[in-house]
Amino acid sequence: MRTPNSKCIICDKPIYRKPSELAEVNFVCCRGCRSAAYKRYPNINALANLEIGKGIKGINHLNGIPKSPESNLKRSISHKAYWATHPEQLKERGEKTQGINHYRWNGGISQLNQSIRLMTEHRKWMDKIKARDKRCLECNSKKDLESHHITPLSTLIEGNGITSRDEARGCPALWDLNNGLTLCQPCHYEVHGRHYAD
Image 1 (cartoon, rainbow, N blue to C red):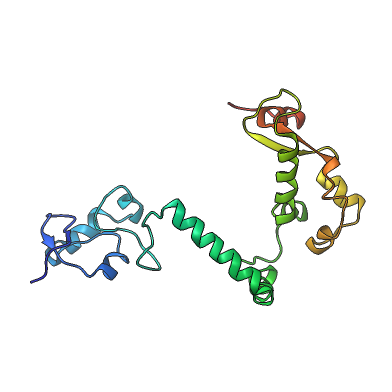
Image 2 (image 1 turned 45 degrees about the horizontal axis):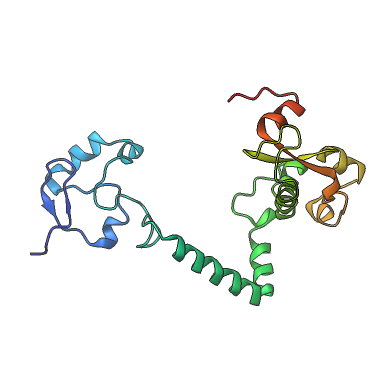
């Protein structure tokens, strides 16, 4: 008989399950308690706080196991190096997961303004603005900094006749650093006439 590595969720009877099985289930129970377990936990989310085996549905045996920051950094460097040396594969992969080819494509319902704000170029623009100013230009705070468009993004999109993300990438007016300034979140809310709830 194998050494028990888990216990029944109902009667606490020690039982053995393969590690691969533990990774795929939300709880472990013996045969006699199976119906009682399903009655007691009909909602799978109710099991979130129970520490039984792994209790995590996963795609591999490492899912749910915390990784060290050093391990994450090594993996990040390795991935960046790989994609830097395989640009054609990266482009092909991107085409498979963008627009109509994406598995969550829902008929192009996102607004262009929101879509542009989710682009990598926009994230880089915001980071450069914050790195340049390093503080809120209204109150000198260094907490909760955000990048603010002096000329609104919607105005730039209309003024430059942008109708797609590709056109946005090629429009230098959108990525002009002189059109941005750094504000803390309360000041940013105030500029846009919104109430900031602390």
